[in-house]
Image (cartoon, rainbow, N blue to C red; front, top):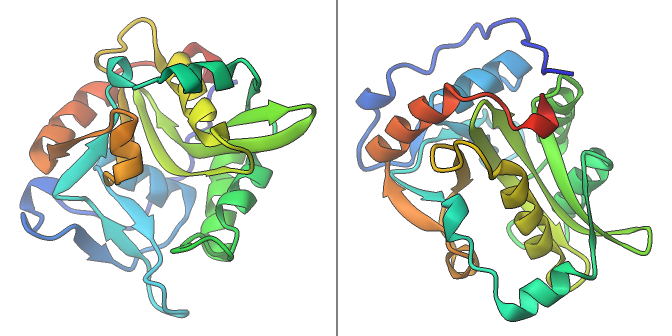
Length: 225
């Protein structure tokens, strides 16, 4: 089934062209209602808690954005071997994937109960999705994010077995490939050394917003229509 469009947000995120060109943090406040989240992603923003309980939500539009060109995914020989040992599933354990990503024992964890509930609501409406790597009936790793047209905004990933999160990423790229692959946009927010080793590159905010405008005009991948 196609995703269900929720009521529009009562908040405005303004004109992205007017954001501070030197600061990733572009907004504070609003809410995590489905309509607000979708409005934010459509303008190139994503939310993240400040880290202090009771603080309002922070909204980011990185000056330097991390994206993974679908044709640029680096799959090493060892990762290719690992892929053969896992089964890829889609949306079969969304809540479990989010909970694994939110594990409080993970360093620099940021997914709190409010964020968890917000993305579960988005999933129920058909906008948030998980890609999972399974072995022997056990969830070994995965990722989740938001799909709007030709955009997939990755939020977080985890692994319980070696290479399992990378295998899920390979599965995601396969799902997003095909027609219009060069226009589709796989957003990973910020570049880390780990993501860079997989082919993630940085682009400026203006370039990201231009690519986002084009990507949003595409249909969803067939799997999520």
